[in-house]
Length: 112
Length: 487
Image 1: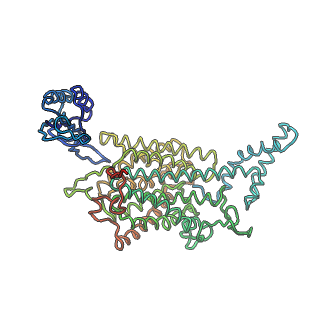
Image 2: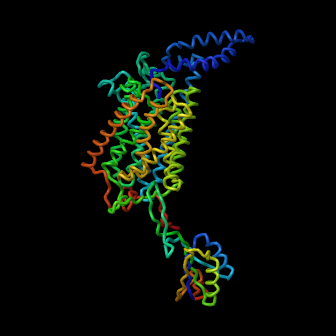
Image 3: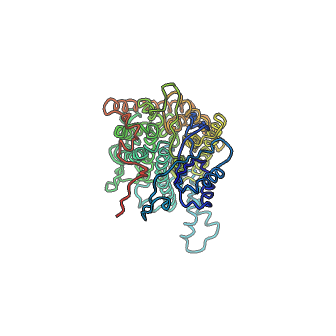
């Protein structure tokens, strides 16, 4: 089992979710996050004073899936989330040791 | 606001209305269908009589006068409606201040606004109304008078000659009951103190602020108010402040300035390297709602200040008020757009209020064109003032000093420039503005200064960082992660 953490532009969420659903992926967790990479922040102005916003709003999608689905899912996320401009985000993959479905006590890949 | 003894002055203006009101009544009274000639004669006789109406001393006597009674009812009703409009302004202040402060201080901001309404109305009933409208009971020149505790109208008095048993006291000469007059003025009184609340928000100690606001609204505001609206020395001099650019808004703005100077800026606003870090308001929709509510309430604030439902004056006041508010929005919005390349919403919201404060002193005595100029300049002025005050480290989270203090001065002086009544002189306006604001400023410095050295006026650094909601109230405005118990 693997966990994909994809940090994407907020307005791309719908497309990425649909692309993953098309692959048969049945669940995901989404959070509103803030951060920056090479894109850095931008300057805003409030009541006459300028300030820098370093942390830009992004969406983080977390998906845990079986190893067989990984390649397809990664390709789908990258394709759906790409605009080609700076700030498109990043995707991280990490191994997952165990998963449990609370309602049925199922474990492993059956639980994701 | 019209002077209290000016009934005769506008009586001529109501003659036409009175005659119109009399006509259908007279026609109904005659059993046989009357000819046009008879009706005209009746109208003429009634109009003649209406020039010198007999004095009335009770509601029963008044009701027997078919001409004046409907006018009295309409005037009185309009004042009561206007009073309720002004109460809505407190909701406007509440949401505006909440929106322009951080979420961690929401409960605190709302508590202050709520308390001030209560303190304002109760102290005004106890002493404020009598301090502001002393009648003949002047104590020191025409600078300080006191007509006694309470509202001044005793419905249980039996002596017909007693001033308290008259519908309106002697020399009062208003087409409204004492009660209607009181409640309208009481709603005004709380406004001045509410203005201070926004400027000192996010760091002021609750208990000290409540004491200060109570003293301001109970003592300082009615005393300076008596100088003009209570027929005091400024009124004798020919000073003009229709609904209180200086008497209400300037007073609030300069009390706020004194408090902010003593209190100091919020933590983190001015960095050690000399740069300014803006502290963002947490809810622009609430701020916008507040400004629209204030704009709405202002029709009662200015419109009610005609002190009758005079069709010409109230209509003019509605028009000048709306035009100045609109021009204020444009002034602030486009100034910020030109100077900072983007239209700043919070500045534009301040601009609306700046225009409204600006027109408040002369709403019944300037032309619509002048109203637009006054509002536009107020909108530009508030932008400049907010930026300059920020630079000289006077930290005012909501811009109250600029909106009410600076534009209050502008509005009062503008009467001397734009008024179509040649009696209004710029020099008189200047003397009135300076004396009222100086009194308020010094009063506030002394009271708030005394509080600083006794109770303290500022919360601890730790509390300021954590938010005053937890520190002062032990409550949160937005308890998002409140645990829910399922039974």
